Amino acid sequence: MNLNNFLHSLSLYILVITCDVFYTSLLMWGIEMIITLDHMSYWVLTLIVFLIILFLSIRYSVPELRKVW
Image (cartoon, rainbow, N blue to C red; front, side):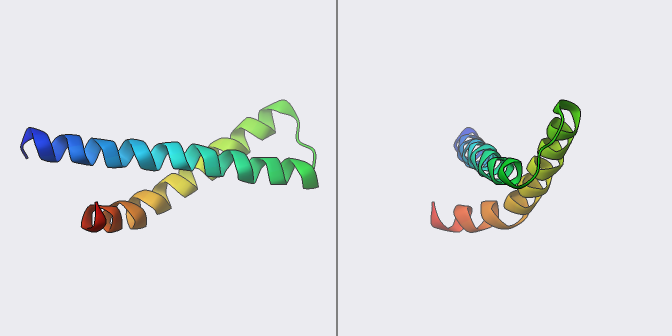
């Protein structure tokens, strides 16, 4: 892997992670509107939701973005 491919892959992963943070915050905002969570359960649920969204987006979005970008 040369430097250009590495920088391309790095930019894709940074883009996906930032989008995942945004999607997680929107989803957690919706969950907070429905139920109330204490401090510790909020952060545990946020981490679980973020990891699920991150896994799915790395599995499905990154290969599709490599074809397009």
